[in-house]
Image 1 (cartoon, helix red, strand yellow):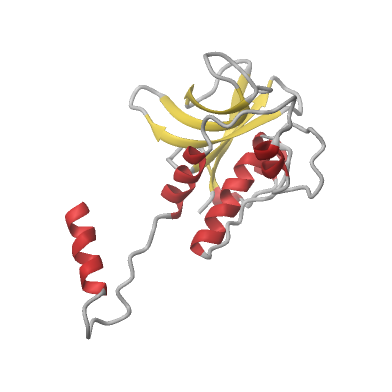
Image 2 (tube, helix red, strand yellow):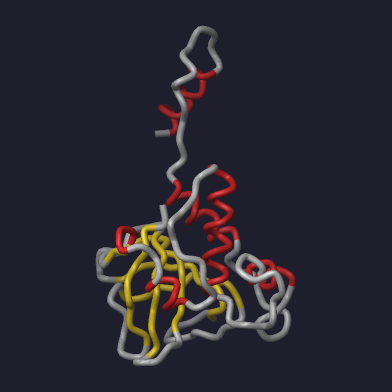
Length: 184
């Protein structure tokens, strides 16, 4: 793969090569990479701190210490849009459930893929949680990158940072999955 990429890049820099040869980045891979860049980011105080407030400003010009899992997701989406000059159809909301419900049906999925946004619901209420699918395991689990969560196991919705988590693809009783969004 690296050899092929090197050969393509070498072709691009030779004279008399058609300009139609362009190496395109997969936006879903770029989204995962963007989320990976923030793993380890921690709050400074409850739902605050320089990076957390930067995530919150993705949807709100004036952060007010609100839960920020969906803000983190939308921040990452916006970074990919800027880098690749593309636009996602994902609905922009601080409310994870609304983010899913108001996104077009054409980008909703029932089976996860890397680069999807995953949306959970707590019980039967309006509280939810959002993250970005990093990888799929063969055993019914997936690795996610989530903002406003915690490290360890179990359901952690109001955490202290951005963490890599291992979750069941179907969710669990306390936090079930509403669905997935194919962002790009």
